[in-house]
Length: 312
Image (tube, rainbow, N blue to C red; front, side, top):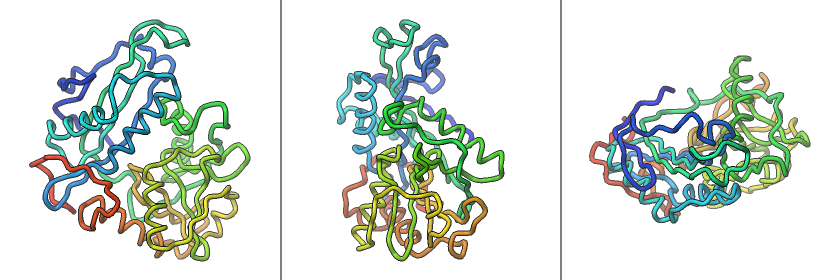
């Protein structure tokens, strides 16, 4: 989906014009992929707008940076305030928010120690990531990164070269998305989504040891499932289990909760979003859009007078 430019981007504590948010071609990040980032959604509410799980996202940004020895000169509160400031300055809701910390123009070499850290926060309108009520996906020929190679707990730009291979292969073969296996052959995740299965009323998802990102939406769905009394199991999942599951769905900030209709052209259940998928999706979106109580304290209000009505 093309990016629709907004007016301002937050850069190292100041709002600058969108078109001024530029880096040099010799910046470290361009040559070595040295960036960490987040994807966050701000939802329109009946009486305004709110950012979904803002502190958790920004804490993960800080954690990702720490893993890569990237010092961020901003506290959690400052980064959260930067997001609110950016959204309010641009007056756009609902929207997608992209904070990114990168190593900029300094020295060219694998060792990044003399390259400065730049922090940007942008937001812009963005709709549904996976079209339709359910997606047709495939198991990718590309595996997720092995443990002790690229840290999967860090949401790092370089990791998404692997994601691009997964997504492009799926697209070329006529699928909406691909699911990668880990190096042991167990189900890992999609190119940008966590994966859940339902079988005999039990909700299954892969553990972090299967090279999956510790997804904020993943955690939200696990919290909701336990709230509803749905049995939850985090364990290594063999590939064939997905073919005989009653329900399968993706979770992610972009994908939200998206049902999977088929995997490798094998229909899942009756091919429609199942009852547990629907229950979790409806509760998740209900809270995000302010239509159900924010019982877990997931929403950070922002003052956006131009917020579109929910459902617009």
